Structures are given as structure tokens and as C-alpha cells.
Length: 605
Ligand code: G6P
Image (cartoon, rainbow, N blue to C red; front, top):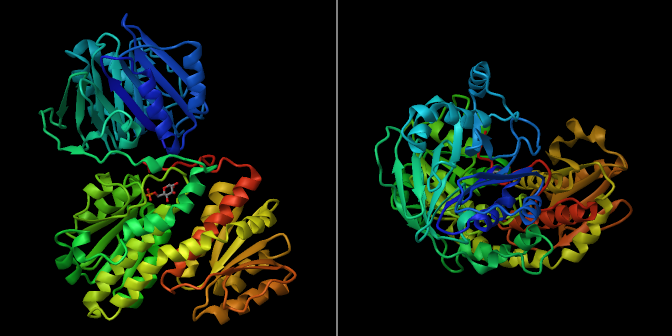
């Protein structure tokens, strides 16, 4: 999704801005742009459809120089992906704005501005902001005062960075509903839509709150709240970035991230140290002891992790657990009983719908726990309790290691809740499952060549069906999501028992059916479902425990999975499905790490 980088310094900032954009590429985008104020107080601009590389080539041909600048990667919402719609948007050859979010009242503002003779150059909602700044600037003392007036007219969500060539030392930033951080340098200041964008220049950040406006100059910064009063926001010092965030010898970040999983699982649940209540927060033991129900909220892959947790929490903690996609829950009035623990699951911690759903339920005095991969993120800050997964920076848009570490974290949560309702009868089971998960994943990774060979059967297909039962139904859903995200093959998941209630009608020799078949209590039932597929000429791809008795034959491809702990099996089988999708996508020649139309961090609803 859109990304912002901005800088006010005493040195040239174009390379800092471009590096920031490169670091934001993982979020997904379709166009990019950069604006700088040069030493002669001229506003200079490059915009390009496509990748940041296009911008770099424009910069090589006509270098823009300046110590004050803003840059942006755009993920189209209003208006097609094009150079004209790319940010920054400008007015009066003087003001430039980059924006993340959606201005909901843009149509009214636009028609009012057009009525006053303003000519718009783009189809975006953003362009109204820069024209409003241009219109109001003569009535205000400076750029800061102008932005303070303009934001009062905006409805919706925004993070913006604004420059004015007449104030070549001032960068004004503002946020409401979309994330924005200030990066503090020594004698230079930065802003970005996430910290990752700025890690090449600083590890010191201020996370702006909704309604905040920042005024940055090379040697100083001030933050004002929505009333215009100066406000001190906490300064956070982050650990220096890890070297292993680099791609190394892998062809894609997704493959690197798949292979990292054993270590990331160990980082999340350190061997021999199953998490205690304290790992969820100081008040967690007390909150867990009065938890009567769990409401999980999440989007995308994180939602699938929540669905797995529902099976675990209800089976082991005997507490009712509901799971709902955040974009639905935020707009309805769910019945949430007293004593419900709200659990949000999010890799980025910035997903707009998840954040809104937490806030939607937050007014009811319920405890909130975030299972999240990014410390200090908006979702973490909106929650009293936090369990941080240790997946590290996830760059591939399709989530892999974030999902499996979420499962590990949710196992730890189930262990805590079960410890209260069942006096820890299950603690040993969870401890050994958590301890065995990294080795189980390593064993699956050893099957990579076989999974790669299996992937070749999917290259020319247009559709695929994924089947699972019990806790492996959400794993099948995650497998189908992975395949559609990166290979663009239409894939759907069904609980295997639902096969004959509809999807069986689709089964023929062109419809591969992927079955997740661990050796659990539901195996025999799944076996019958698969017979039904074979009887209709469907081609089966079965991921089955080596002891399950499944054998390859005509139309049946079996991948013998190493036997593993039953609770850790959802993690292990997920990794096999990740590899399948990865190799199908590679064989189809798609852009694996940046699949078309998708964004990593969905900061608008
Ligand atoms: C986007 C990403 C998915 C992710 C989802 C939820 O759609 O492409 O990979 O699962 O957002 O994101 P979150 O950061 O909240 O887990």
C-alpha cells in the first residue's frame, strides 16, 4: 500500500528518499514520485508509472538536488495507476504533497475548488489537499499554520507530508487514521509511513498519534496535537536492523522467508522456555483468569491463524472463541459477553480494518491483546496486552513466516488459557508441541525438491480446490490463499465434508484437488472424501503423514510428510503448501514478492 518518505536536512536528500522508497516497495504499489526543493527555491519533480527503478532512471537522466524533499509509492484507490495520478501532487509550482489514506469528502472539496477555477491534473482524492493549501496559504502565517487549517476540512484517513518552495527548510507532516513516524537524525529530520523506510538513516523514532501535526527542520522538530498545542511524544530507540533482513543468495524474499521459519519459530518461542503469562503483559495473568470468551479479529492470512486458534482454544481451554474478519466486525454490533478477551492478530500492526475493529469493541471495557510482529505499531499501541511474534521483517507480500509464528504465539495463548480452566493438564502437550515445531519445519523443508516437482502439474491450471478437515480446514484456506495470491490461479478451500454439497460438481481432470491429510482422527473420513474425487476423474495432490497409508498412483500424487507432533502439524503442513505455491508461481513467471494488485500493509479500509 502507499508509502511516504520525507526529509529535511543540510545535505542532498534525493538518495535518502529513493532508498526509503526501495525499502517501502514490499508494501505493494503501482507508481512512484519524488519532489525536492532545490537551492534556488525551485520545486522539482519526477513521477513514474511502475517501479521505483523508473524513478531512479529519471533521476539519472535529470538529477534532482535539494535538502528538502518528499517521496511516495502509490497503490491506486482513486484513479487508475498512471504518472499523472502518482504523488507528489503540486499546486502553484510551489506546494507539493504526498498522502496515504483516503479523503472521503474529496468530491465535495473538488467541486468547490473547481467552482473557483482550479484545474485538476489528476483523478486522485489527494489533489484537493494541495489546492486547499495553495488557496489558504495567503491567509495563514506560514506552511504549518496553513496545514493546521487545511486538515480541519478533511474527512477520512490521511498521513501527509507537505513542502513549500518558499519555505525551503520546513517539512510539515500530519496524520489521522494512517500511520506516520518521525525519524530523528543528528542535524536532520525524516518522516515515513513506517520505520523500515528510514532504517538506513536513523533508529530513533516518534510515532505520531491521530490528529498530530509535525513541523520538521534539519535541526529541530515540534509536534502539535489536534488543538494546536505543542505536545511531547515519546521517543523510541529501536535496535539496529538485523543483517539477515537482506535477500542473500535466495531468488525471492518469499523463499528466504519460508526457509527462515525454523529460526523464527525458535525466536518466538525460545527452546525450553514456553511463554508465561508475563510474556503477554504485566496484567495478563489477571486478565486471563477472568476471561470467559475470546473474540479474534484479523484480516487475510492473520485471519486464518485466528481460525486455527479457535479449534485449539475451544478444545483445550473450553472457552467459546469467535473469529471474524475485521472489515465485517467493525460495521456490525456483535454480541460480546462480559469477560471477553479481544485478540487481534496482525503481522504489520497497521491494518486499518483490524485497528478499527479493535476500537469498535474497545468502548465496551474489554481487555485487548495484540498478537503482532511489529512493536510500537498502531495495533500494539491500541492494546493493553501484547505478544510479539519474532518473525523479523517480512518483505514478501504473501505472508509466510508471520503466519507460522502467529500459530506458535496462539499455541502459547491457548496454553495460558487452558492452564486456568484445566489447571494446566495440557501444559506438557503444548510445551512439547512448541518445542518440536522448528524441527518439524526443517524436515518439511527437506522435501523442497519433491514439492517443486509436484508444482509443475499446476502450471497450466486455472483453478484448484483445497480440502482439509478440523484444524486443517483453515490450513487448506491458507494454502488456497497463497496459491491465488502469487500464482493467480483461482483456488478455493472447503472443509472436506462439504465436498458433496456443491464443489464436487466442479471436479474433473482439469481441477487439481489438494488435500491436507495428517494422520489424525479425521483421516478415514478424509480418505472417503478423496475417493469421491477420484471417482469423478479429479487429480489428487495429497499431503499425507508418511504413516497414513496413502500411495501415489494414476491421478494421485502423494507427498509423504514426516510424522510430527499433532499440535505442531498445522505449522508443518503450512510450510509444504507455501513451497507448493512458491514453485507454481515461479514456474508461471509471476512477480512472486510483489504480486499484482496486492499490498503488504493495508492501511486504508
Ligand atoms: C494484506 C497482506 C496479507 C496480510 C493481510 C493482513 O492483505 O497482503 O499478507 O495477511 O494484509 O495484514 P496484517 O499485517 O494485519 O497481518
